[in-house]
Image (cartoon, rainbow, N blue to C red):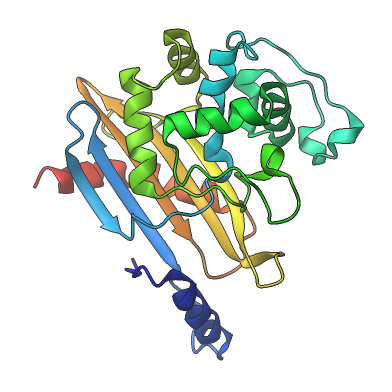
Length: 277
């Protein structure tokens, strides 16, 4: 795991130069940035913190967690399976996302067009107000410079950024029901997040997020994939919150977040043993 200082942009440039040199081996190069942070959900005590965890990056689809709270609080979303919205050609979505979607499917399959319909129904003022009230990351929903697209793009490698340290604090507040939103909004959001199993009887509730860093021209740099997995896990009477982030240094054939999610699910039992030492 590579520790990265706060001189993040310069390090990314240096990493890019180093990776352009001929490689002696076919082994995957190390990530540009990586973090795993685990807190006790009740007390907030840090149980494990490895890597660079205070660096803000795009939340990508992990933003569907606070967006669900907003949607339920405002009444745009009703319950786990309502509303159901039909796909429209104007959404210009990937083939796999061209289907009818409800809130549970939205979170499970990470449907971008559904997110954008929620923010459009909220409106720019309410959307910005929620992000500010939640204290979510840097709270910047202005979007790409000069494009006036914050309402639909702020969380997609754009203006909004959040660190792993901030992610776990948000999840703690979601579990505790202390966000400035209704009790129903907290409960429904917790109910629709995908559930996974890990070793040692851990049940994991979490949301992935994948995107890429942008290059100097503003285009996605496919050699710099961002992968998130954020949520909480329970085993017996123990409950923890976690965030794992990795920014890769080469193009991947599958979403980076799937790799990050699967590695966290595999590593969790051992990480908890380390946390107890």
